[in-house]
Structures are given as structure tokens and as C-alpha cells.
Amino acid sequence: MSDVMIRLRMSQADAHYGGELVDGARMLSLFGDVATELLIRHDGDEGLFVAYDNVEFTAPVYAGDYVEAKGSIVKVGNTSRKITFEAYKVIEGSRDPQSPSAATVLSTPILVCQASGTCVVPKDKQQKTRGQTDG
Image (cartoon, rainbow, N blue to C red):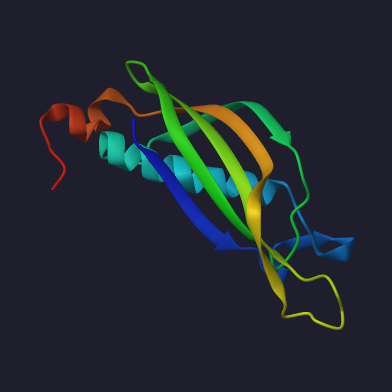
């Protein structure tokens, strides 16, 4: 099944803690956007996110960092879609007050969050299964 990836720079508005630390819930918001695109591509409908069954935050994210959020549908049921997610820091913004606009492209992206969850697309909303094709 196809993967979806989005890349986004974390802004000052995303920083909720001291030291410009980004709230972990921001990663879950990105995963929600990835899930929506996956369901649209798979079923032609946004579907509904039912639950996360696992979430692990593995490294901090700060304002100025660039994060790639990726997801993949790993199991398809009658109406349910099991999705796995990963978020990686790919560019790290400077936290040096003398060089606030500096940034470093990471040679090895850092896994900052991984999760899995279930979405549901009601049978009557599954446009792709009713004979529509990608166009």
C-alpha cells in the first residue's frame, strides 16, 4: 500500500514549553493529516480516526525544526484501516541566541515519534470500492 509523507517546519506557535519545546500532540496532529490523505487516496473519503493503540515520543522537537511525518496503511478490514506512523526531525533549527536563523540538515534523520492507530471509513463512503478509479 502506498505511503504518504508531509514535511513541516515547527513554528513559534507550535512551541508550548520552556526552551521552545514543541508539544508532542503536534506530532499527533501531523499524523491525523497523514491519515486523512491516506484514506482519501485509498477510499476516496476522509474517514474517521477511531483510536491510537500505541504512541511513543523518542526525541524532542523544537521551534525551527523541520519534521517529516510518514504513514502507511498496513491492514485493511471491511471498514477499518490500521495505519502506522513515524515522524523524523530532518533539519534542526539553531538554539544559539547568537545565530537564531542558522539550521543544520541532519545527515541521519532523528526519529521523534512513532505511533499506530485505526481509522474507519463507513462502507457507504468507500468511493474507491464502488468502481471509481484514480484519475
